[in-house]
Amino acid sequence: MMEKDQLVPRFAEPRFPIPHPYLIERSERCINCGTCITACPYDCHARLSTDPRRLAEPKNSCCRVCWACILRCPRGALSLYKNPDFVGLSSSEVFQPEIIRAIQNQATDGKVPVSGSGYGGLFDGEGFDGIWTDMSEIVRPTRDGIHGREHISTTVNLGRKIADLNGMEFDSLGNLKSLIPVNREIPIPILLDVPPYPVQDWVITSLALAASKWNTFVSIRADYVHQDRRSDKTAVSAAGKTVQATQVMDFFNHLIVKLSPESMEEHREKLTWASIVEIEPGLDQLAAINHVRTINPQIVTILRVPAHAGAPREIVHLASQGAEVIHLSTDISGYGDDKTPLWRCLPETHQKLIEAGIRDEITLLASGGFGGTYSQNYYFGCRCCFC
Ligand code: SF4
Ligand code: SF4
Image: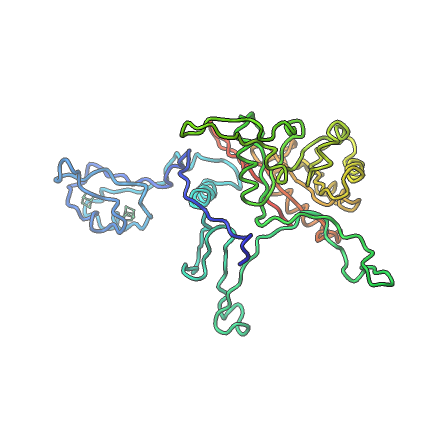
């Protein structure tokens, strides 16, 4: 595996623990016989340390819903049911509580969940980008003998792709005449985003730092990005020492400068050094792309298109007219202004681009959140890239 593809995950305790999906309840019919203690393979049942004659409340967090204790209880004193707090986590059609829980588990331990007959050992990796598959003889019988090991690359190129290698032009000396589209390679298909609600400066700086460590990018509004945000300031560390303060511009190589088509000239200087620019919806995004390229021909351009019923058609038009990366965005609940959900708009866009014969030429990004039914909304602070 290439070194650049390696990320070392660290366990991070979730700040908002998700309730356990199931609750075990012990009724007054219990005679404290202890059968459930021996029945449970996960030690969810135990006697009270203060009074060993009686059973403690079952530990729901370790229950794997095997039903053994319920089946073996001689008094029918145990019941198992869905935790209403868990069921109430989300009313989204797509991001159901189980999916939210799986995402949080991945964010907590940095590991990809494996289901089915997958197993650890030589075939698993260190993190999201270290996935190996074990292709059984059923899938691929001959190439590598009984089993084939295959590294799934998570690398993504942001930018326009070459449509036709056979169409490349060379001069009489054999030099390439055709224009090679500019693009940026990232080792994982994730770009970071600043949350769409007010956050403190340190949050944005932390996102920029994370983007630099992952060798990817974070999208930040142009009016937030200033040269004077470089590290010419100091701060006091946790150990009480004066240290150089980290600033967003320390990671300028990992910034996507986000601006409107109308504010190109206002932010012209930033476009001269920016690696990627994101153009918000506005009067003429295609004209804005051409404008940006006259300022910096090496820049990769992203056009943001909010999800709506007509977005797939609009994106096909933009892609056919020279757009290289499209960012399909939704609100904090995963919906567009007209309540078009991302889960419907994204595959439709993909399909329309295929039908137009240009799907392979552009990069498609998607972002948004998913809603909870009460107090909380969940937001992906990142975008996923679909090449
Ligand atoms: S098996 Fe049933 S009756 Fe016996 S201790 Fe457990 S819950 Fe109580
Ligand atoms: S259902 Fe299974 S895992 Fe859960 S408490 Fe009972 S025996 Fe333990």
